[in-house]
Length: 374
Ligand code: PEP
Ligand code: MN
Image (cartoon, rainbow, N blue to C red; front, top):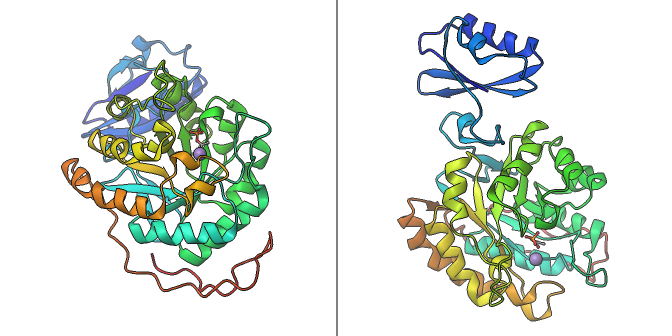
C-alpha cells in the first residue's frame, strides 16, 4: 500500500505510521511528492486495514499499489523524479541525468591489445564507459564462451590505464563477487533476466547492475526482475532494451521503441538501448541508436571491435572504430532534439607506450601511464 501523509503532518506522525507498518510485518520507504511525504509499504501488510491506516494522525490517503513492482515504480521515485546511477568512482560517468551515457566495446574481450585499442578509440569518440564480455552466454555450447578470469583482469587493467569504467556480464551467482572485484557495472544479460538467484546476488553488492530485457519478456516482467535487485538493497539498476523476438526475420530482434517511453512512464530507473543486439547488423546500429535517443533513452550500449570481420562473437553487428566515431558524430542533433547533452569529446589522448613483448594471459600493461584523463 501507498500512504500519503498530509502536507502539514509532523515527523512524529510520519514515524508513528511507519512503526505501525513495521509492527504488522511490513517495511516502509519514504519518498517526497511536492511537500508531502509518501510512504511505500512492502512485505506482508495484509494485517493492515486501509481504514485503520487512514485513521492514523497525519495520514491523508491510502491506496493499494497500482503495479506489482514497487521500488521500481514511479510512485517511489527519489527526489528529482529519476534515479541517476553513477558509474565508476572517478569524476566519470552517470546515467539517468541530462547527459546521455554511451557504453561501447567488444562483444567479447579477445585479448589485452584489442581491448586497449578499442577503449582508446571509443573514448576518443565520446564513449564514457567500456563494455566487454568475459563470460559469454552463448546459445551453442560449442561457440566461443569468453576468456573468463583473464578477460576480467584485462578489463581492470585497461580501466586503470584509460580511466574508463568497465561493464561486463556476470552469468553465475557464484561469480558475482569475482566480477564485482574487476568491473564497475555488472551486466545481467537477456538470457539471465529471470535467473532469480543471480538477481538476488547482484542485489547484495555495491555495484550498479545493467539489466537487459529478455527476448520474450514483457515490460512488467523486466520491472519485476529489477525489483528483485532493488529489494535486496541495491538501488542502482539500469534497464536495457535490446530487442525482443518477433515474427520478423529481417533483423536479429525487433527493437521495441515503444518500450522506452512506456518504461520512462512506469519507472524512475534509467533506460538505455542496445542497438547492436536489436538489429543484429552493423548498418542498422546508427539508425536504431538515433531512434532510441529520439524516443527518450538515457544512453546506448554499442558493440565496437577494431576488426569486426575477425571478431569471435557478434562481428556482424559490431561497428569498427571509424563506424563508431561516425555514429557519435551523427548523434549530436538527436541528443539536442531530445533535450539531452553528450559527454564532451575528450581531448586527444596521449599515445600509450608500446606494449612490451607479447602479453601473456595474466600480464599487466606495465608501460602504460596510469589513469589518463578521458
Ligand atoms: C551482450 O551484451 O553481448 C549480450 C550477450 O547481450 P544480450 O544478453 O542482450 O543477448
Ligand atoms: Mn554480443
